[in-house]
Image (cartoon, rainbow, N blue to C red):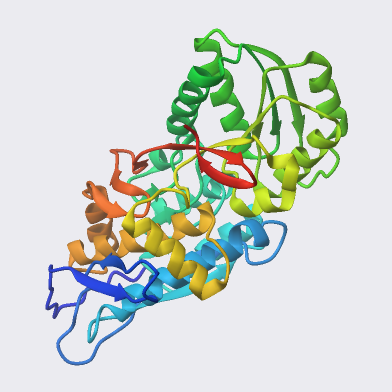
Length: 388
């Protein structure tokens, strides 16, 4: 593992502000950047490893938006450094598999000698790869994995997504208070770690509130026909249906539920604007428990939404937002650490409290899991907005 330190730092702990100008009728936005270590004389790149599903069934839903979030953040951070050291990403394609993630982690650690890896994307991948990072004392930060307990695998691993034990209780509390549902059904991917954990969390919270679960249906990642499961749910006429799944299957569940004439609203973990657009009328009224939304009207978040749209010609989704925030959080930690040594970066990450991000005020808890405000969104008139 490469634990080389930069020995000639000229740290500036002042804030660099990038002002992005728009036309007279547009918002003038400010994005706050941490100052990365600046070397006297020649500069040297700070190399960061990344594992992403750039091919395979998760490439469109995870790989592309996450890589774009990293790209936008990387450009902003490096542009703000002037003569300082530049961040550089080495991206390994995990092929949307656990095996590919393990291979990518081992290559980045043992061949490329990185001290930090951003990834992996899913909880199943993180369950296999986080122990590798911990054993080699390499920092790993997953922007998107959310199953419970993974950050507790070691003190070198962190997550930026809100975990199921944070989002589920708060989301059910908010939606139940307004909708008053008393009977629920659940459907989940039985071979994915996140989906099984998310369904378990839903069932636990519903039980504590005395809400009856009238049906629990399963499928497997890669399935495309959910009509049998949804028909069985329909016959029991629940008040609400909880869906725990990775992105590729969500669209089919919503669309086929709509085709069957199911009237109960769906609550889907991490529903994105692209999902809503693709599902059309089938997504109307669906809700999601999530950590970020384009509708959150803070200046820093709206600047991000506008800048992403300008660069990529589309609105960012939740995965792009979390990867964007992740790289900014890492840059802040490197600035605080005054080093590229993995232990120093680990300690700096663990000490982050109330850092301003597009997600809100961000902190890590004692296990390395994210702490910030959870949100509930609902699809209304074809758009995801805040559930109020």
